[in-house]
Amino acid sequence: MAAAALLLLFAVSFAFSSENLVSAERSFCIDYKNNCFLKDGKPFQYISGSIHYSRVPRYYWKDRLVKMYMAGLNAVQVYVPWNFHEPVHGVYNFTGDRDLEYFLSLANQTGLLVILRPGPYICAEWEMGGLPAWLLQKPNIVLRSADTDYLEAVNNWLAILLPKIKPWLYINGGNIITVQVENEYGSYFACDYNYMRHLRTMFRFFLGEDVILFTTDGNTDKEMTCGTLDGLYATVDFGTDTNISDAFNRQRRYEPRGPLVNSEFYTGWLDHWGDRHAVVDAQKVSRVLGEMLAMGANVNMYMFEGGTNFGYWNGADHDTRFRSVITSYDYDAPLTEAGDPTEKLLAMRDVIKLFREVPSGPMPPATPKFAYGFVTLKKVGNINGVLDTISPLGPVTSKYPLMFEEMKQYYGFMLYRTTLPQDLSEPTPLISPLNGVHDRAYVSVNGVYQGLLERDAVLVMNVTGQQGDILDILVENMGRVNFGSKINDYKGLMSNLILGKDALTDWKIYPLDIDGAISSGWPHSNQKSVSSKQAALSAGPAVYMGTLQPNGLAWDTFLKLKEWTKGQVWINGVNLGRYWPARGPQQTLYVPGPLLSTSLPNNITLLELEAAPAHLRVIFMDWPQLNITAGKS
Ligand SMILES: *[C@@H]1O[C@H](CO)[C@@H](O)[C@H](O)[C@H]1NC(C)=O
Ligand SMILES: *[C@@H]1O[C@H](CO)[C@@H](O)[C@H](O)[C@H]1NC(C)=O
Ligand SMILES: *[C@@H]1O[C@H](CO)[C@@H](O)[C@H](O)[C@H]1NC(C)=O
Ligand SMILES: *[C@@H]1O[C@H](CO)[C@@H](O)[C@H](O)[C@H]1NC(C)=O
Ligand SMILES: *[C@@H]1O[C@H](CO)[C@@H](O)[C@H](O)[C@H]1NC(C)=O
Ligand SMILES: *[C@@H]1O[C@H](CO)[C@@H](O)[C@H](O)[C@H]1NC(C)=O
Image 1: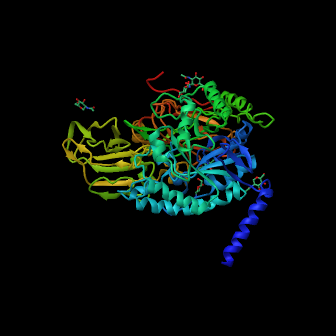
Image 2 (image 1 turned 30 degrees about the horizontal axis):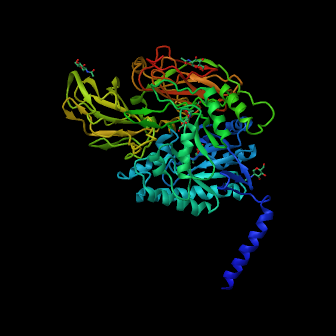
Image 3 (image 1 turned 30 degrees about the vertical axis):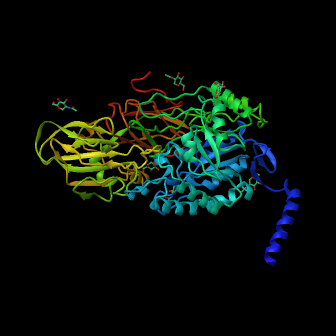
């Protein structure tokens, strides 16, 4: 009784005093009466841009944020990729390029608020939509649902992540104004309200009652119905080809009052290998931005700075067929992949100026680029010749093929080896009858390349050889599907391969840790020369190395792999990503200057999967080439 009275007294006196304190207190909330956000009690409209710290080297975070601030933005929207922070179940990494809190503090110092999107699923054209591939060890897991295995992993992750976020909420003295729950959940088949309710409970438990939680969905009734939930403010996303008033009217059906929000206004678009480079017109983007801002809407531009899918972090789509996202995430965004301001940025800033005061002073210029020129590489060896180094654990034997996930190797490449069961003097079909190669298989017999199989595209090839010959199948994971119903995207050989009429069996399966070997100095530290027989073979998976002599500069540059076919490239131990000039549209890889040494030889390593050119040269240029697709002009 006494306690209740005290509590009442406290509540009353708090209500009285808060009236006067409102300007001194930090608050961020929704004004349902006036259809806007209120920051510290005053109407607030955000003009935000997306940037993903996982796609920009830490060294450049500040540079990109300052340019976003100078463009007139007052906020940035940021995804947290779960798989980037929990690469192995129960092992967390928040340091270096994964230091989320450092990124938040830089944004705060720069004067930018943050709209945080911690998932757990994020899409983002990122490997598996940000979900860790180790989740797939449970073969029947239903991702993004109330499945108990999935929820257990989610609970553990959110219990690590959200307490780190809490002090960064605006209302707690930080810069995070709003937090998104899940991501475009309405476009997922499961439509599981129990899952969304569970996430709402978790987010409230760890972040408190006062922060604005919201959802973002594509602008159709089905998506809005499955993606929205009471207590989570419903927002929409759409690009330049959508009728703005129709889209916001749809948001109004779910949020009759409150601010209008476009959480992803597309400034450009992603590319897949083999597709034409996507471009979105700068004048159109700025005109539509102006129309939304004039309605008082809050807009986040997706992307403002796209960056790069370094390493194996690109995602993939699987609508009618599997299509992998390219290494560059330039996105035709207002800041380029290398963080340079574009005409599009200046056009958008001119529009923003009409609605809020943009910081005075010049836009920081493009970072300097340098054309370091040609480097001639030499062959280190075919994959089978370097197996001891890149597969220190050695093989696992299995009658039938095992998937990457069963081998607990989630990314990159694995080698499947068996022997030819009989003489094949005539070309004999090697078949992937169930389309079970995820995603590409490079086939050699006794070290001689024979050709490849490709998911959804090439399901049969010919092999010749003799009984007992070694059949090597190097399988490449091209990035897991990040969108739609096929995100349980297992990798490796999903099913038996058939040679002639019989299923191949009795495999030795080598997990490959090429990244581990390279980061400990190989192959540059090891001058073992390659046999002349191996050096003569230019086709099939092989490792090449070279050095770029230091010249005192560590400027950004673009690596062109002209006439190379497809592979992966590392510089000074850092995995720059995939190259595939034979398909395009991306022809050059972004090399951030800080990776280069000004005084030591810079070590270049290539894993070329199909065929190296006779010249064995690569070239460092001072401009990017992202728009040349084979067979499409
Ligand atoms: C954590 O991530 C950073 C940045 O990618 C990396 O340099 C570091 O080695 C990682 N730490 C561990 C323990 O793996
Ligand atoms: C954010 O920046 C403001 C202004 O520079 C500063 O006063 C504040 O301490 C910073 N907050 C955090 C959490 O770093
Ligand atoms: C958008 O749709 C509305 C009807 O829903 C129509 O009146 C309006 O003209 C359209 N706007 C544009 C730019 O097409
Ligand atoms: C395999 O070889 C046979 C016989 O030479 C040929 O007819 C067939 O087109 C080849 N198939 C492929 C996929 O190359
Ligand atoms: C390149 O590799 C050599 C040999 O291992 C090593 O001495 C050198 O430091 C490496 N260069 C850089 C920039 O790490
Ligand atoms: C490719 O992009 C460059 C600028 O980055 C541009 O000058 C060129 O016209 C584009 N080419 C095509 C075929 O679109």
